[in-house]
Length: 327
Image 1 (cartoon, rainbow, N blue to C red):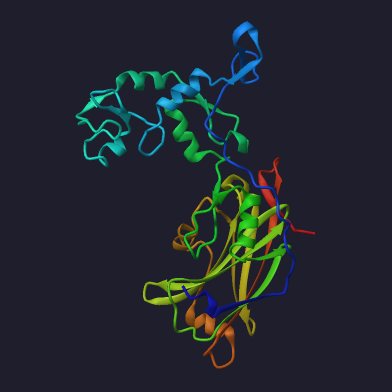
Image 2 (image 1 turned 180 degrees about the vertical axis):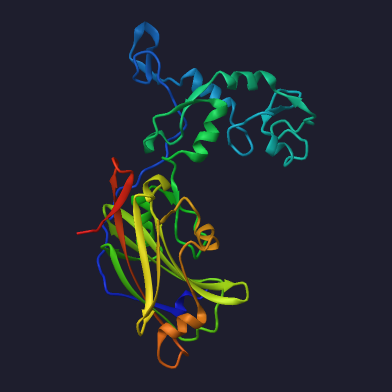
């Protein structure tokens, strides 16, 4: 990476406010009795209280692999002493039980697998808004595609492993990655590179825009496409794909009466940065054309990219959409 070789100059300005961070819940605990999560007991009916964990939660603990702590799915293995572990970890422990060190063999814990079939559990993203309850064996598949699951950090330059909801990621991009934050639906950026003939895969910049109550990530980068260096700009929507389709954007670069224009729908940040880039879903400028648009002696990249974002106003009767420009 050599992101320091590109200077991004924007005519817009503004910062977003920090918002509250949402958290993923702990494993589901269901109270019984009076619903308070405690029971009364003790000699003479005294006021001694103790937390109550539901039978569902106890079974869920039994289904937790002691090695990786993930939920176990068939085939669930056990040793001669009854200790269980998941099939993935079985190969890691060299056929030795991690609890008693006895040889594992190929014993299936069919009873535990049957018990799991009877369970119904809430989605792990319950506290983020998902109201669904699923059979144990369907829960994992749903959670992999749940619309309430956290998003990966859209910052492309450091393989960032941070996940969270959109307000949390906006604050993370601003505070930890020092990304430029702008308010408005139009942009006018100038990208400068002193030696455009040195292109490493990939030099890039990221800017976040806030408009229509949503956040958008504008990416600009240089990389090798085959043997030729190219520059690419594209927009990603900080939300799900079913929401991204309600927005459109345009990008334009030009000089001396000549221009290239790209129009498209922003991709959701559910799609990785690399996936969007490798699909060429954006404005792609060959180096010779980029230098032509830079003007001068064409020895330095001075590329101005303008564009805007708009919301499509749905016309349900006609089945078409029309642009709704930002005021």
